[in-house]
Amino acid sequence: MSDEPASLEGWAPGPVDPSALTEIVERAFDYRGDVTLTLDDGRRIEGYLFNRDRDVVEPFVQVFLRGEPDPSTIPYARIHEIRFTGKDTAAGNSYAAWRERRQAAKAAPDG
Amino acid sequence: MSVPISQMWTVASYVLGQRLRGRKRYPLVLMLEPLFRCNLACAGCGKIQYPAHVLRKHLTVEQCLAAVEECGAPMVSIPGGEPLMYPEIGRLVRELVARRKYIYLCTNAILLKQRLQEGVFTPSKYLSFSVHMDGLREEHDEAVCREGVYDQAVAGIREALARGFRVTTNSTLFDGVNPVRMQMFFDEMMDLGVEGMMLSPGYSYSKAPDQEHFLRRQKTNEIFGKMLSSPKRRWKFNQSPLFLQFLMGKWDFECTPWGMPAYNIFGWQRPCYLLQEGYTASFKDLMETTRWERYGHRSGNEKCKDCMVHCGYEATAVDTTFASWKGLTAAARATLTGQL
Image (cartoon, rainbow over all chains, first blue to last red; front, side, top):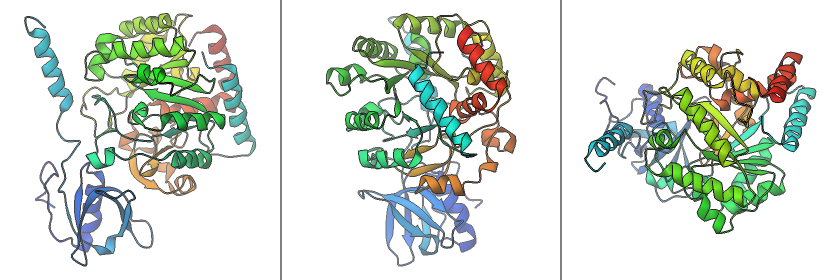
């Protein structure tokens, strides 16, 4: 995975080699944006991957699909590709930006 | 210390009951997060960074109550997200009071005055608003990244106190905190009339916007030592005195990650309120399948190395109080004398 960008947003590592699947699922689990999964039947689903368990007989991920009230459980074996398609909501340093704005406002003549 | 006697008795009898039954691991406080949505985006918070469709979700009251029953802890803390944005917060609180659970409703208090005027809540010894206050006006507004929030919170506190509610504060301390200013803050909160204050160092959430200002262990000991070495008699803290002494470097505790388990829309969070390493469908699974030896200060886990946060160590402090004469006498001395 040497071609992994600094931010995972937009990352599309391509069809998943079974040996790399576990690691890409871990990245998706840690990612605070939606991902798109392509399944073994060609179907594409997009949602927030919030859980995974690889220590069970049939490892699985759990995803909140957009517009669905309940989570879906998908076995690792059915995942063909994972793309990091949603906005990374944890990216960017909003705190630094806020401090800069605040200090600028304070430095202004009427601040 | 300012915890009411009835609450102290409930907690003491619960802890002693667990110990008499020989339970090595038991929960003390359920951290119930009905939603992640919030009306602030604080610099040190790593709880709210989710896609919009996830932020729109929330637990049902029935899911919350099932979690409370399953967990069995005598106290329920309701953080989030901002719980006053939860559409069924009134019904949830009423159901918890009916079950005699001591509730800490953790709020930034922006909506507190409005919700009280709407009649959403009724005063009860089981309900305490735990208002997020990270210091005096300047420090607090900086911590929550919005001007004016301190004044809104103070207005909410005044309204709640005037209506006969229990009100406590919770403060998260970061690097750069001024101990003298914090002492002034303690005076200000006591002047306001809050029942007690809760303190904790912040945790370095990997998803929090501000990664530079979390306290390391030695710094935590220095700051809390300066702040609390000669506490005024009028300062009341709504937490275990042994936990505060731990923050001052007077105890060497190990983490109790199962002491304050967290439940939210994803399930039971493994291993603790701060780390997100997965979720289980049941509390039983959380307790039985989590590799607890991987967590805590002595585990060597890098994520736990500097953590001294209340959700891991307050339960240790409470357990220590009832586990030895040393703990019991230290807690009693601090409670009676006000000295830490």
